[in-house]
Length: 142
Image 1 (cartoon, rainbow, N blue to C red):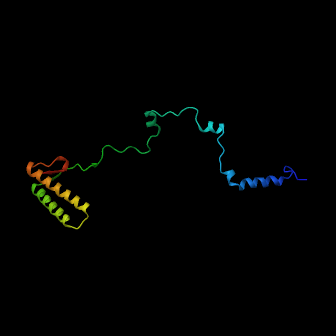
Image 2 (image 1 turned 135 degrees about the vertical axis):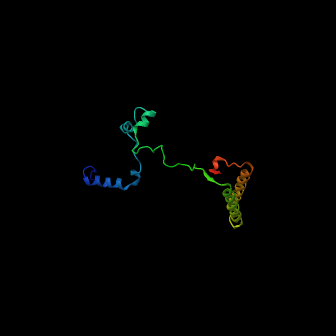
Image 3 (image 1 turned 30 degrees about the vertical axis):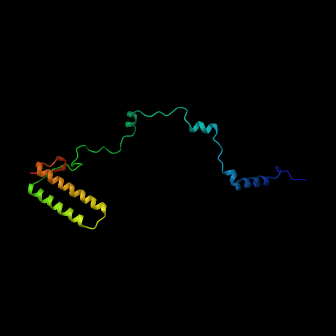
């Protein structure tokens, strides 16, 4: 006679250990129940807050920055120099860029130096023709 599987309590623990040691039985997650779905999915759509609700829901912890700044954000002060100083500066810049071009540098650096030479020549020519330096140059020649 064969012993009945239900009569021996040790058979149940052996069956449990067989299930626990079988990784394929633990690898799949059961599908969610209806109750799980009802808890995780709201019955009504979530509405977006109005601008007022959004703006007032989280007030900043720090006060906003002052609009009356002590210093300018951008360099807007004009430097006033003499005509002689401007001429000296232009000539020195031209000499410096020529010295940079004479160095053994990568072509990308030489292209930037050549752009600087062109910019210096253009500024000098504009000053000689009009005696005016544009306001966006942040310099005023007196």
